[in-house]
Length: 62
Image (cartoon, rainbow, N blue to C red; front, side, top):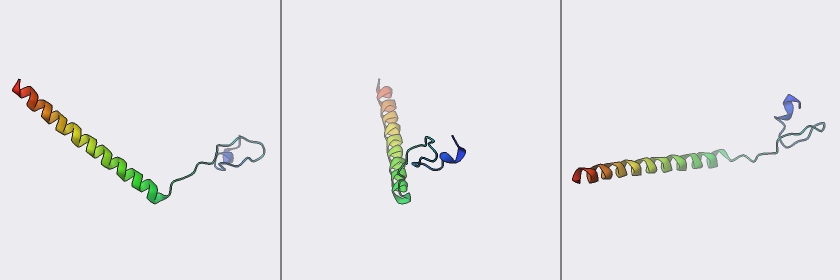
């Protein structure tokens, strides 16, 4: 396989197999998804932290 065949995605030059064309997200759409994942991870972290505090208080009462 020629080295430039990788960069020509979705084309078939000279009978070489190439990777299929991959649709790319617009920059703003990708940025929105990145922010949503950040918010999700922050919410999960805060939830686990609150759960750990609650568990500590529950164990203190025993």
